[in-house]
Image (cartoon, rainbow, N blue to C red; front, top):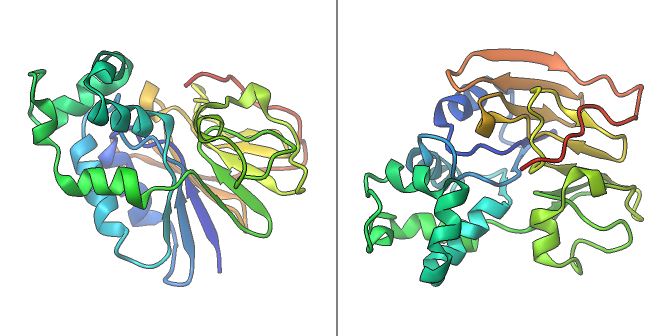
Length: 236
């Protein structure tokens, strides 16, 4: 059984579909999505439709990202709308064809709120890995870590976790399109939200698949001999 991790999607459905069509994930494998499905990109509605359909299939795990949480916050408290719009929410709303009216939330289907609020989770872990959107403090277990730290911590705060497990995260966009491997932490947000690439990493073999916004695919393998920081810019 293999584990595949997919980084921040940000509404780039074409890139997501290219990865899903090409990664060799079978029925006994697990695919972990690291969150930030919304904002910045052109097809948020289609992305959430695709992911909602996938959740009915075995083997998919969905984490919640900070942008997903901001959207949830705006849903429950109208005073948060301006913050959400300024951080990419305008693109999300436009994908629903809503424009920016006072009743914009009525355009978002109930199943999308169900996906973001109930189906998504803040972390996932196995015997070898801890999956989070942002990061985790080294001496705190995922169960006891504050949700906002799991969602918002950037890569420049990463350190070896007390469990000895490798942390797999997104959030800290690598504008170069390269995976950032710190040894103890691997960040696979390769900047699709900034026009770069969407990445899927297979953790058994460290093969990776990357797609650009047009769905053009690149396949490679992460070489892990050097555990020093690589392309570790911490922007989200």
